[in-house]
Length: 539
Image 1 (cartoon, rainbow, N blue to C red):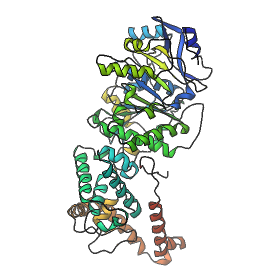
Image 2 (cartoon, helix red, strand yellow):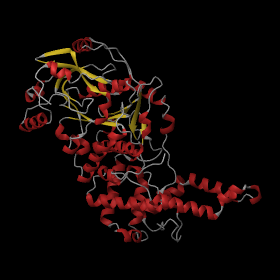
Image 3 (cartoon, helix red, strand yellow):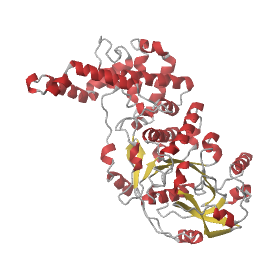
Image 4 (cartoon, helix red, strand yellow):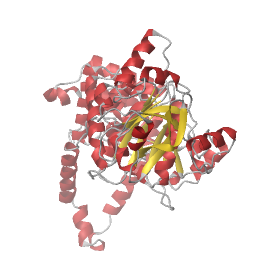
């Protein structure tokens, strides 16, 4: 592609025939040209993107602008709201002189508009419907990153997950995982892993201490049931607009690794569940990954490889991913190479390191008649350097752009309105209340002393301090619900055979139960895990 030499050449590169999102108007020779719009083709939004720039340059408003237009065209959007100021997407914006002035400059017909939105919070910490994941579905790779385990400890954690899968010990929350680790290092449990490598006491101690510290910081609420079904992010409103899912994160800012890794779990879960659709006329979902540098900080090579592969493959499932960070160097090169749509806000060059980052950023853009080093440091708030993929999949010319103004509220909605929106959501009743059903903790704690190995291969845990405490807690009430279920089953089993149908007699027979247990164990042994070790769920 020849280097564009005029505003006309650049504008021609953005003259798309199909549906597109309007970013703003071209800046050329110090002037804003409203007759030369800068746009992104809607079908190219699943080719991923990057929104970068220094603090205060307008990245958040760019997210809001893109999210609004996607919603208006029927595409659901997921926004990670780290600073807590994206909830305004649900409310009409406020007209003022600045908004009216910007709209006039870029040729925008601005109308105050609110968009359909759902609000979520990790584990219910903050305003929003609680998002939870079970330990099993989260998987060992992502959990190892949250717990800051090294490579050896991560492998041992994977072994623990493998054992739990094999033995039908459901890992739903942190106490389930802690109980299994304690059991596998007990005298009774050590033999269980000898054939596949074993678990050292030192490594188990590190894992247990990490779990305890993690829980002490109030993070236990993220893991458990009801587990959130990420298909909820794919909904559209009754008027056909895409629902904007806003994950409120200010309450967990002190745990950046947690929320960035949890976002990766959401993306990995979508990757598992969605079928391939190839190239489509619009994406199924566009996912904005704010503060992306936190995801990659101190990440292992295996973790980075998994992110790269997920980003590369999820495109064909109709999901677009935008990473939002300060400089492109925050994103590994292999991931950056997958990001075809770029909105680069101003960079600062106050230090030698800043200047080096500036030059590296400029080199990532196609050839341009702009002096990018000078342009990138001279952009104002709400201005950016843009290049996207055209309808043919080729990079568009680099365009200095004055961005449009969002039509929704540029700031947070007030707390009472946000709480009201959460309570009125049809998802609130489904996910608001935590559930603690029988799982590995209860199964290991409730086994009586001297019980031989069960058909699923679980060993007696009597004798370890960890499981003694667990058993006492279970006997005091944690297992009451499970006991009531067993009592009901025993009551049914005492019914006269003649009063039960043939089907009931077969289902209740020992042979049928043995077969079902065998099939269940086999399914447990064949739990498939993703690139991140997350478990596939059969919905």
